[in-house]
Length: 340
Ligand code: NAD
Ligand code: DAU
Image (cartoon, rainbow, N blue to C red; front, side, top):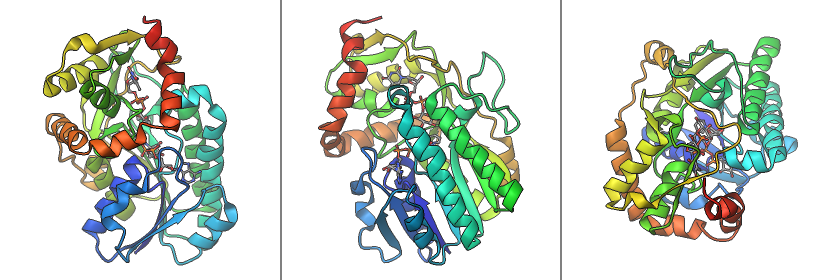
């Protein structure tokens, strides 16, 4: 099988490429990534000499290039490429629409032209908006995105759906909850807290810190996408999540405890505008129809993740320079100086 994976130098995409090449040593992967601030070829170091992995630095909005690449006998496209950080989408929505909506459409056109056998759109539970204290997101929950990021992901999803309904393109959309694990860029909550706490720096907590996310270890997301590729019914949406709802404060206290650091580092700052209160996924369809089951409990997953960040300090210290410094002071400078 020949796969074209987009965004395969990012957090989940690189974990997915590593997972697939290990599980299916005879599969070929063309990995397309434009290497934004979030793309990092270091994530793929262990497979740099693997003849079944070809990295191509290209933008998914480049129609001629996507046509050329997908035209080279690709069977399956898995689209991870995206602008993925909610806070950045609040600062600069523009690039989110360009990559997450227009880029997806470019890929769909090339996939349609070359008659691929599956297009998997890697989406997010954030397209469903926010939950109250009860209930879970099912695949039938109406889309109600609240941030420019989630609105752009919902836009991409709707195009994927339309290419199935109108042109019969064999598609699936996956909607997963919050991932964590190795190679996650340190702007996201868990790696941000591990890196800042290990340096005894203040830990910015938005609002009252009682927002809830449903956490899944990244490898379990990869195994679900693998099943969707091989067993997903065309045109279907599959929700992915491991029933691990935790408040942000709980996550931060867990990390502090494991690192042996003081809770006095916890710093309440001004809330994120439009901050979704709670996410919770109902994964019943994916479990019953595809036979998916997560392998990692939150307790083992977070322990392994903390250990990975401590063992791979060089990986994230290299990232914490240049563009990231500039972003960090724009995002947190005033907030940390003027706490909530
Ligand atoms: P990430 O930001 O770590 O990686 C995104 C990758 O896409 C980067 O390597 C980047 O260089 C690449 N990219 C961005 N724009 C591109 C373009 N125009 N052309 C080619 N490549 C481009 O993101 P992630 O956390 O790994 O998320 C991957 C996907 O999974 C996204 O689509 C995201 O919406 C979705 N998702 C993420 C989570 C999560 O918790 N992180 C949960 C559910 C779904
Ligand atoms: O639910 C899936 C989504 O999860 C993905 O689609 C997104 O790509 C991914 O970034 C993630 O979005 P969140 O907004 O939930 O993740 P983030 O790590 O940015 O924030 C998690 C929670 O922690 C959220 O309630 C905001 C809070 N937070 C975050 C940061 C960065 C803080 O309190 N302080 C912070 O500094």
